[in-house]
Length: 117
Image 1: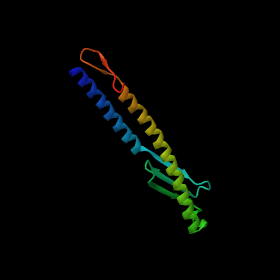
Image 2: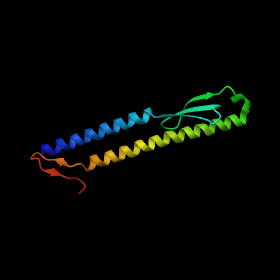
Image 3: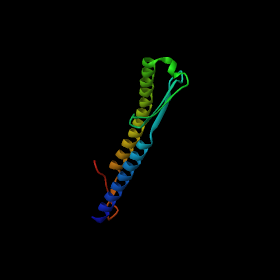
Image 4: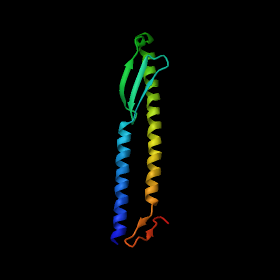
């Protein structure tokens, strides 16, 4: 029974490592987007929260309402980029986790146990 337990523990460690890597990658995601007229640049983190806002030299000429709208639109675009990156990572994570869940486990006598089959 020891071989199967060791094999299972090794799988659990790989899953843990994969989850830690996923968390680190998600925390490192950021996206920076500028408006077409380059009056507004917004940076967001991997969860879409604004982490930076830069206004161009002519941004004040837009007026308060237009500038506010441009900030919101640009922030939305940056959040969409971050969400796309997060989605890609989530797909990769799910794929690798499925591979680990389906990977055969080895018993002490080197015979193979295939879970979920």
